[in-house]
Length: 302
Image (cartoon, rainbow, N blue to C red):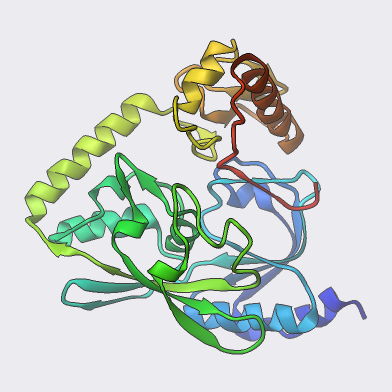
C-alpha cells in the first residue's frame, strides 16, 4: 500500500475526506487540477492532528484557506490538501485569538462592528487568517504585523508552539514562512491586539475602503495582486507601460481595469496564466531593468 493510501485510512476522524478533488472549485482563480487527497477540517485541533498524520506518513501537505493568492498547476497537487475551515474565536478585552481558517475580511469587519480598531483596512482582503500571517497581508498603509502579537504553530511531528510575531520576520507581503525559514509548520491560530474604537466610525471607514477597492479592482475570478510592488513604481504601471493591459493568452487575461490583476475569463489554464506572468516579467525587465516578484504563489505539480 502506498503512503497516500495508508494515510487515507487514518484521516476520517479529523474531517471529511475526498479523493482526486478538482482544486479549481476551491481557488479564487477557478484554476487547478486534482489533489490526491482533500480533507476538510473544522477546528485548529483537527488541522494539527491531520498535519501530524501527513508528516508521520511522509506525505506532502498543503493547507488551503480561501484559495486566494495561489496558482495551482493544471496537473494538480500530489499529496494531501487540507481545506482549512477552523474558525473559532476567543476574546479577552482588546486581545482576540482566532483560528487560521477564518476569513480575514469577515473577521476584520466583525472587529469594526465590535468597536475594536486596527483592521479597517482589511475588510476587502481575500484569504484567511492563516494566509494573512504567512504573507503579512496588508492594504492602504496597514498590515497584519501592526496588530499581530503571536501565532500558534503546529510543529513537524507532534506538538505545537506559540511564537511571538517579532520572531516571524514579517516584512512587506512576506515573512519567515515565505522565505522558507519555517518549514513544515502549519498556522493554527493567531492572536491580535486591537484598540478601543467607535463602531459607527470604524464601519464608515471600512465602507470607504470598500468603495475605493471596488472602484479600482476588477471583479470576477482572480487571485488578487499578481506581483509585489517594486520600491519605485506600482507593478500595474510598469505592466501597463510595456503594453500588456488587456493582453490575453487562451482564456486568461490581464485586466483592463487594473494591470496587476490577472483574470480567468472562462476556462483558463494555469499554464496560460503562468505564461502571462513570465511575459510581464520579461518585458518589464528588458524595458525598465526591474525584476517583478510574484505575490501569487505557484503550487502543485508544475
